[in-house]
Image (cartoon, rainbow, N blue to C red):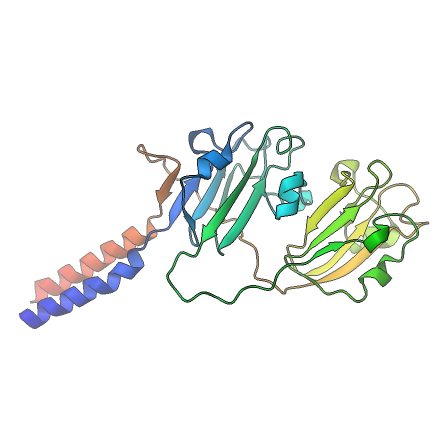
Length: 284
């Protein structure tokens, strides 16, 4: 009997590591993801770890969520619209430790209404420290000449290796140029998308989020077609993929604190262990 009890204790101990619970944080608590909320005050007393999730809750169509780098965060410069999360219930799993920056890309929401969040994610397990990832590079398109007419941007890009996580900075006089991310067909024919898709700040920062070919043009008439203001690069998958949104139904709020709650997977594992142990006991 003593040996069987010892076996049961060992089995229970084996389940304990699996019961480590990830935390789900509702960004902004009751207020959600909206205007004029002090998100740094909200995050100040929280410890974010690898495996935790952020839930950005808002009215669909009124806001969105962009994961950006520090430069874009400080200048409130949103990436292309195709990189936005727009469901109204955007769930992001924190896959890696380090600083994470998020903004709303709707005009003035970040710059005038402080709809932005920066957090530090800690390593969630006491495992040996992983090798430091290669630092991302920031490329100022065209170098000293910037983004303008009659520059050979392919010659500028020729000796550079662009990788996932790197950023492109398009620097120009505001109102004299703009930046459009296009496909290969539009690049070759110098056809710009609708004006609403253009970047126009004069200091446009784009994070290279995925590997593959990327095409950019200036949408001002004749700037692309007659003055060669266009750039094509190939992005290598040199860094781990960024945190991807995880689809899922809206969770029920916890009456005690709806700013966060734990996932149910650990509970299911625990229940499975209890059932197994009860089965063994009935056979003793």
